[in-house]
Picture 1 (cartoon, rainbow, N blue to C red):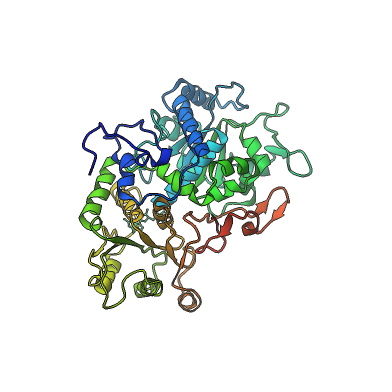
Picture 2: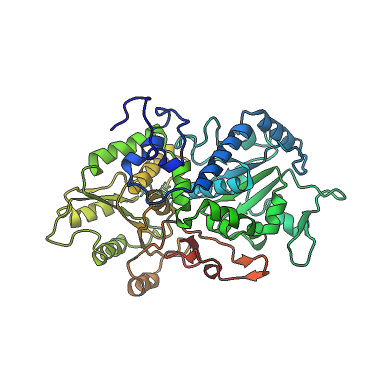
Length: 498
Ligand code: GDP
């Protein structure tokens, strides 16, 4: 490729039209500047306002991040347990993202937390979790700062007043939901527009930290996070901890105090993840080497790259059914050459099982000159295994280099690949991962559903939105509130920016 040494002339293309700065050396993180060499040119340009907000956030991360005097001060204050609104104008406020679940989930969660941090002028720190090191997978995204929460704050009770971050859940005393329910904050006007802390009367002081539980199945009071009044309240809290496993960005568009800013940042709403994901995530050199080697050996020569992501959530679902669904999708929408025709395509298959790659090769190997390739077959999802996570990350990026994608509904792994690529994939329907697999479901799926549907946008689906309209005081149909928010094709109760 064209990079030989550190003296590289970076162009607007390398820097993704201004999303990135040239503040990192080329050698320290090759993927940062080589993304463009392996991907189609994006049809979406980031807005000048988004770029300005990113630069502002970088300055904040540098001024307040771990290792700075401001960080030490904030940590001391947290340790002393003293709450109270940030009085000092220079005082920094923090958002700690507690990562959990698979890598796709973790990436979508970090993206959402990052956008929330930008909107609320907080420093984002990520607790990558004890079951998997995001730290070794990604380069730092912010110049001269780390986004990884240092151990002293993440560790056990001896080191941190926050305790074990992996143990926070909906039952935690300092969760927003429990504070609101136990009278820790009071609603002081009838319309619910004004809420204030009733902490430590008679002086109304915000707590030193609040935990935000924003994971699937969260309750009514935790969902009040998406209300303007609660956001004003949270603004006074120096430390926020957040546990989320998904893409709640569409929910931020529905939160009144953020709507105007988001409108200015994202004139094209359907490119929010496409920009934020390409801004934040840069595979480490080791992961990137695996991506580029595999790409050069197997995909680079093809006229067109077709990516197929097969994810099976129900163990009992017969593999043949999954394969039939894929083949029927591919045939109906003519995504690969029909019998007796050949093309210069290459097919990239990602799946935990090697069987799919083998079957697709048996079916299409003779028709696609670029071959059918499956980089790995891990068997099953594993936790706390860095090499396993690295392969998953490499495969998401390999998929994102494709010209056309067929992905599996519900899968955050597929959302990340499509979002990075800026492609609207063909999405194969799946029953909800939480349901038991039944034959009845299989029949219903085969008869009533098309095998796949083209996604309506590049954006990931928000699986667990709050339907509550805080101003109206009742649930609403979310796809009728804003013209740019629709229901997802794969998750009927989910919403998506379009
Ligand atoms: P989701 O469960 O499909 O929403 O995606 P996640 O990425 O959150 O979790 C699935 C995890 O299973 C991944 O992070 C990988 O660890 C593993 N996995 C699932 N599918 C694949 C695949 O096709 N290739 C690889 N290498 N790993 C996979």
